[in-house]
Length: 158
Image (tube, rainbow, N blue to C red; front, side, top):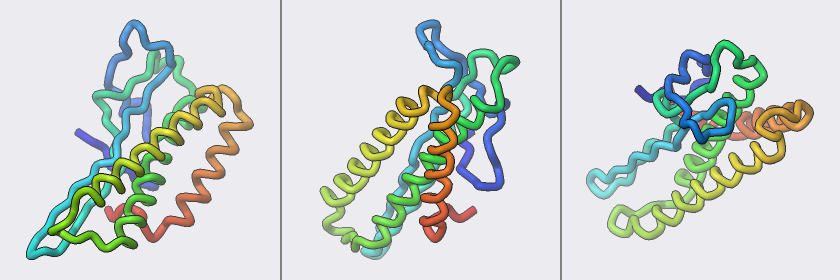
């Protein structure tokens, strides 16, 4: 069961139901995705873009030892996913997509959005050392919160 992103529903360790592989080195993993559904009815384009958390693919190596700081780090991964979902909603609202000529424009748009999201996720882990650098972690939390606020009008509708 996917968990849609919500400002009023932060992640808990109980949401992390997957199991790490023996080769996995990290303390936890957040599996999230940007779920994009599109449709055309009577030649009118519509779309739904959601940031979702995938409990069965997310895990914490040892929930008894998992710290609140680690959960904050994992939550920010999910928040970054929502940020990029909002950015994609914003782009979709600006460009006029034509149902008869949807591709390659829509494919290019989503490919670029997913690349930017993955790049930011990578940079977040690299700069914060997977949340171990407290100062950088705080910096990222502040930046992502500010950017989410700027895109509030593109927040997912519950």
